[in-house]
Image (cartoon, rainbow, N blue to C red; front, side, top):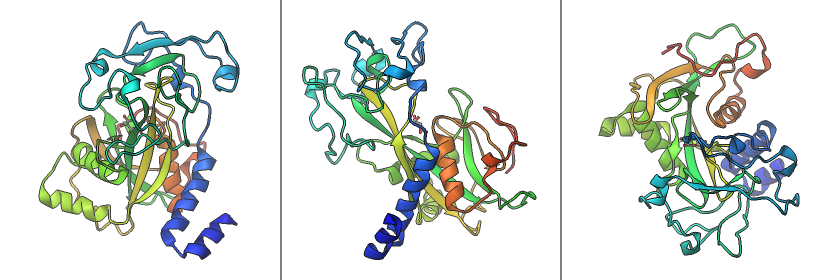
Length: 315
Ligand code: BGC
């Protein structure tokens, strides 16, 4: 009902789409974080998080003796340009956007500790305090481009199959969307486009940028959420926004020369015909795009295997 209300009141196609995305999002996302409680902390051999049982993840559950392990990586403490001051008391504007850094959370307003001025992870306890590997106190925003078109050779499934641009990440060989962190001054659309150019095109040539600009002309934000990421801590966490750019006719992408760059070891068009166990929350993002475009919903079909990485090279 609210969907129709929004549509009739505003008469806006875009608003209808974003309401639809919210509904789809609530269907595919899960709640309690697990990767954010894994030990040892990612990138270390010996940093053990305090064990947090499922029943005590929520801050609403009283746990007077809770003491998280304090850890911030030395490269973050060195105060590089992408990181905040080590002292959270120096940060102004939590829960705000100062025009450069967006410290607002997709989860709503988060709490700030009175004594330390540290933000509190809205998804609950992680067993680790400090920032771990993350630069910002509070939310750290990433953007993920979801670039799709219809597969040329349609397999005989119960619907039309999409293909999507995926990379193999250099750090863990996982199949992933070619996304990355949003830099100061960028919004998710700008960051998704830049990351796509860096990781999937390895180019900044004017002609290539123009091609990608065209592809992003009708881009749409389809997912914005907290991510259950192994880097998360009690005071710093990842949030991602997925940007969907779909090439309905295939014309805009037919001459695209994919080339892996930056954090990507490989890049390819991959048919969305079976579950492939993608990195972070990328599977949820891809499913929203599949539903949005009315494509074959491969995850309902058990005959297709699940795998962590993928080296099929379907161009
Ligand atoms: C990755 C994104 C991912 C985010 C949250 C970023 O480092 O580049 O693709 O969505 O982390 O896990």
